[in-house]
Amino acid sequence: MKEFVEFIARLGGGITSSLEQILFDYLATRPELVNNPLFQRANPNLPAWSNFLVSLGFNVLPWAGALLGEEDAYKKGDKNGEAIAHGVRTVTEGGVLYTVPRLVRIPEVNVASGRLG
Amino acid sequence: MDMKKELEDFGVRLGGAFLGMEESAATEIYFRTHEPGSVGQFPFNELIPGLAPTDNLIVAALAIPPWVIGYLVEEDAEKKGDMKTKAMGEALRKFGEGDAVYSFTLPIHHTLVRNIPSTGPIQARATESRPPPGQGIPTVPGQPRITSNAVRNEVRISDGRAKVGMPGSVRIST
Image (cartoon, rainbow over all chains, first blue to last red; front, side):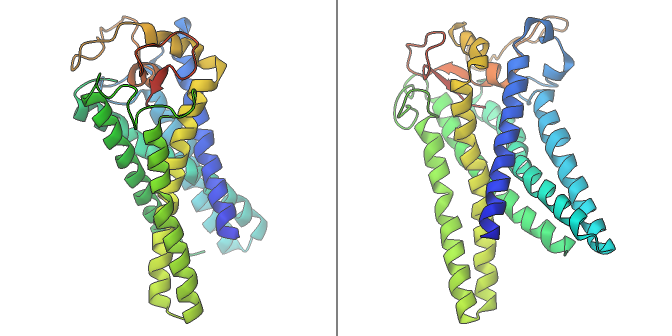
């Protein structure tokens, strides 16, 4: 049962990160934001910087922070803090599992198919 | 808390997620390299208008067997006291779990993009002319660019009958 609950938490984290990406994709279509550096790309084949922000900023860093926090709380015997950090880590792990492969998928598909979208 | 084990588990899950990503990338590459013949054809069709393409659903379904088999192997080995097989089953379950997190989220993402009203401007771009294959979208410094994934990478007419605001009329691959 615990594994199933954690799976649902990870899936929730993945869906949340997809909603974050949808929000940024929507913002990128706004005329006033179209030149915003957040929606530019270092290379046409690469993901937009907003993809990196969602992946690294909203998921990978919180995941790493929660992992370290969980270990710290464990060493201090802070059961409450450990449980909170574990929950944050589990949810953000779902986001990592969805967004990090996407960062690879976008250039892979663009390059392998020889076209952008 | 065993940090090393947690990181190993995460690595196994991430490996599963990358498997799901490669499966979906393979179908996407096939779709793009076989356009327009692949447009609207199985598995790039939509079973229900507004639902993610069938290839996304197939990739999601492929994530289930390793997950279930791993779970059953783990349970069986635990009852028999076979710790080596239990560890193998646990690893397979976690690998399938990572695959499932990626592969289940993908069609949910694509379904949401098709149905959330705020993505209207993105759908509107589906009717714009597309660059020739291999040329991509020009990126002139200082000029407005189409940079969003959901705009540039993704929105495309899948059945040749796309209309603005018509759910299911575009194939979106993010």
